[in-house]
Length: 377
Image (tube, rainbow, N blue to C red; front, side):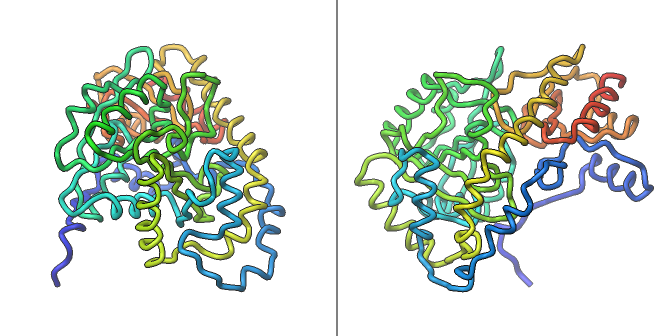
């Protein structure tokens, strides 16, 4: 049988994965500092309130709308304090699906998108499934992460159709700043390319910063699309409700909306139950975010107060990046010698292996013991 070349991925099990499987098969207890699923991280949820949100006979009625329920889009408009009108919001089942819609909208097979490096590797797989190519622009670190406009423009070619931002970046926690935004918006306007901004972690800033740009679609002079959803906003990835907010010139918005609505009408993937429950779920976000944020800050404080750890500055999100000496393979050594699981930098396409990524969602006792063993290595 012949399969599509879009699925021609070589996915060998790396040595770290093989070691982890062997240790778990042998029954060895592992201190996992990579947990990124809040429903597995010991976060306390208002379970009754969440279950009650679905106790509604309206979940039995199927009333499809390609853009999603207008009532839910009004709720999301309220989430943005009115900066995004309901007619600019299109619902999806997830941020991943939102990416796939936008890649269909903006790109023909063989076209390109530019994405940050380092960043979450999912983008390359999503692009490959749409038969488009990925080029990278680097984030640089010097007392904090920053985007270099010249390096970004160097990555753009005549086939580039979209610039992808992850704001704040996953895993570095870098938020886009106003000066960076003005430079890259000018580049996109000059080169005629759209902006796709993944803002799922935007509610998890660690401190205020007047220079930060959090909602790109509300600021953009060029066609722009902001993505988010319940996965991070309410810490409920299983609820499968995301969205796209359209920004930029009104004429471009109208043209993009018509085509996005056609794409969405082809799939009609957003479920009725989660749309019916959305009002009550969104109302719970403040309490759930408070609990998640307390967890993040507890573990971040542990890292900041630890001796002999080079913690790179992170402004938000759910992860921390450590820079380590290039004297060994730290991730493999930690797992082999201390039964501590962390993610090596190459998982996120760092240019060298001298970085470790830790999830700040980890249970604090596990995190504290894992960091202690890291310091003892």
